Picture 1 (cartoon, helix red, strand yellow):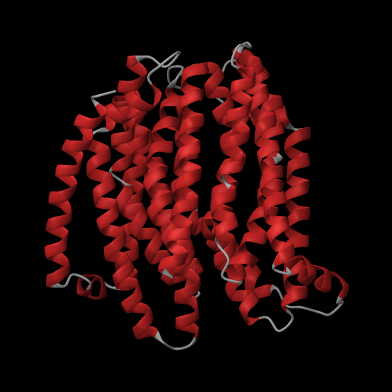
Picture 2 (cartoon, rainbow, N blue to C red):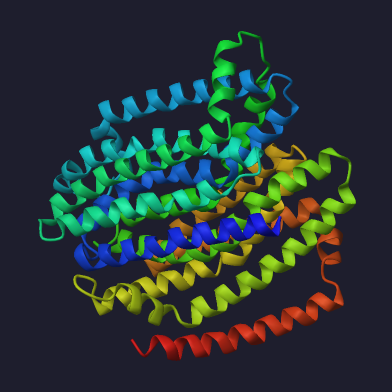
Length: 461
């Protein structure tokens, strides 16, 4: 399991480094203005679905159901065919009614901005079709204990976007966001090709072909029953970020960009530590629980909990203490001003308050999904999302864009409380053995020292 986590970590780290190079170029070439806001709105919509799919929702419903199915090839093919047709139809609807969709997604934009955004929203949405294929193949590869291609292939999207920015850097800003939109599709195609190559080697394509040819009746009701709750249960952080973007259309130009850049920085430790860990942890704990090895499963979860908590504490303390310096080094150049740095760093601080709650909630949610409590997880997400909406409406007036980010963190705190209550406070507090508390104090001390050293290092640039 540790080897698989390290592979995931390295793949995600590679992708995120390229992602920051992309964002650095974005900030320098586009800056934080109405054009960057338009692209981020256009890309946010399919990216919301991508994150919901790719970060566990589909896999958490698909893998347990696949494991139980006696006709695995037919089951896999039917799920793929059904979902792909639904997503294809949805993409056609978005393309045909793109003006109406734009009115909803960018409600606060003026008519000129909406006119520019409309075709870009339609183009970007087709990325969802491609990323579903990637996610489906990735789930089957996980079933065969192969994680590398999925972890590393996400870099292909960033390479495509970086290339588009370098090619179009001297063009008008409106033309640049057109190049970026087509680059999203090219990046998605590259990810599909990478997965198809590995899927062929692992005989997954052969499995799907057998499923296509084998005309036997397969029950998919259990998967259907768990999928929607799993989607909603995994989507709170992403829906919160999407809600922030929508509400930010009513604020000053650049607000969406501040949220985007800050959320990108927030997603770095979340992806490196939380997603890399949970992607490997879920299949393992599912197999243990299905083998009636609950004691071993809980012991594994306790160890993962502490490792994850130490890493998230380090990321939170360093991120908050050095937020201004981090944003300045990464983004403050070209069209990205010093004022943009201050705004983005403050938004980042508000987001980082929720890093630990969201990270630990993701871990605990794996246990609920493994024990088929999908509806419970969905209920918790609904309550947390409701809290986010309420606090966003309350805090947007006094705190503007900062209030939106803070509301997202409050939603994470609410969700963590609900997960702890479901697992039982007694079980949760049993994790806090004396040896771990000593390491906790040590971790906080090391994190503070690391933040001071890192700040001095960043000031050299």
